[in-house]
Length: 213
Image (cartoon, rainbow, N blue to C red; front, side):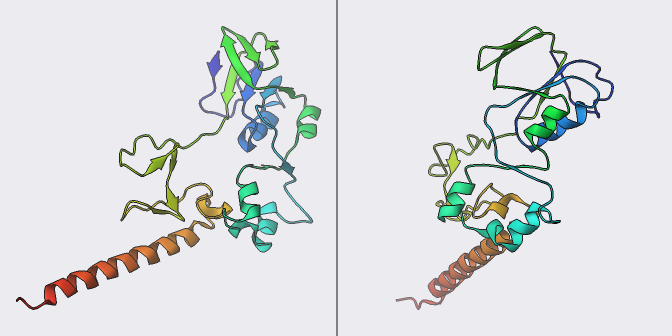
């Protein structure tokens, strides 16, 4: 099977299999369905929101209702952190465009794709991977930093003195990994770093000024 690496796909006059049911997967499938048969493989269904709600973008509502700054430690934050939303399109719209939905892709051999329900799709010409990513912190070889695959921190402050994190998904709120909101965590960490530095400077000054016996 071929893999789409770049370009807008208009030259790919073949059956396309798209793996990934997030925003990118839905958007790419919708665009390419205008010129070819598209099958969209999804492992898990996500809630869907329209691009406009009462004339406003969903993020406008989430921001003004305070949802973007709800802490991950809150009940709402814990629930919201477990799921992502599809924004701007939906299954009905894609089905109307001719997109065929498939279960999770689990196998491939030659030009044949196999799915979780044991069905197959023959003569697949192109596969578009839009499965997203997950963080891999295995490269951090510092004791106490990574636990069960996740970095250990409290709002970006690691348990190892002097170690901080910024930009992690749901580090503190839904906006922690978004450009429009990451400054909240950055300001918090800057204050913590400055406080720690000032405390260290004061401690060093106190040791220096102690009279010799």
